[in-house]
Length: 265
Ligand code: ADP
Ligand code: MG
Figure 1: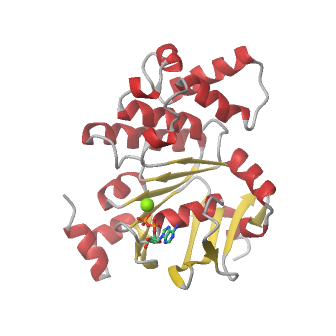
Figure 2: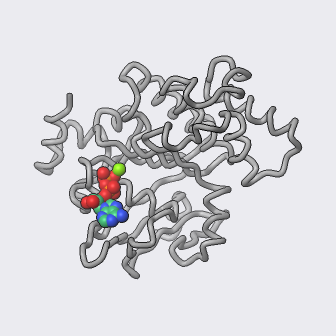
């Protein structure tokens, strides 16, 4: 068992979260292997975002994490419990090892700052570069996420871009620190169907090329099946089913999962 652990980038054990006396996440446990993508699927309110925010250390102060919970993250050859770190230590790991993209690129981007400057700010958090180098780095990131005309995007304000382009700027920002783990929380939900597929393809390509691990959250099992091999099915704070996506998709054991599949558009 000890040897197998060296395959993991992250191991979440018995993660439970309460607000006041209401427990909303119940003993959630999962592992993500280095270079793999784990999907988390479940209807709205099932605890997917709370799980990802806990991993990032970005829960609101009102959220109380049960003391038995562990979130072990790989730093070189040891697993460090993120829940036992100081806010400063956690910030450093978040800045250097993790990236995150959310559902709404519009609310994550600052409307009054040019896209290039926003990515520069993200780079500056973990890298000291002279101004001219910074711009080069941004243009290179825009090329990696396949944004057309990177020079134009660099100078553009968010409202001048399409939804898919804004999400690509967010992805550029998230991968700017060359993260070991990328957390994508409903990254295509707010996008037109036509750009969803292209965005998923890009994420898959970046994940493979950079050897990144990914935690991919969606309420749509079809989207998960497109990107992930393993999936965690959540319902009202519980993990109801876990395993290979194709197996669960073709032969769901739990009624809830059967419902999720039946409800697909
Ligand atoms: P999902 O991402 O699966 O839609 P969330 O993780 O956002 O679900 O939320 C899980 C549950 O936790 C929901 O029932 C939600 O109402 C509750 N919750 C989330 N954030 C808060 C909060 N700040 N205060 C109280 N309850 C919250
Ligand atoms: Mg959510």
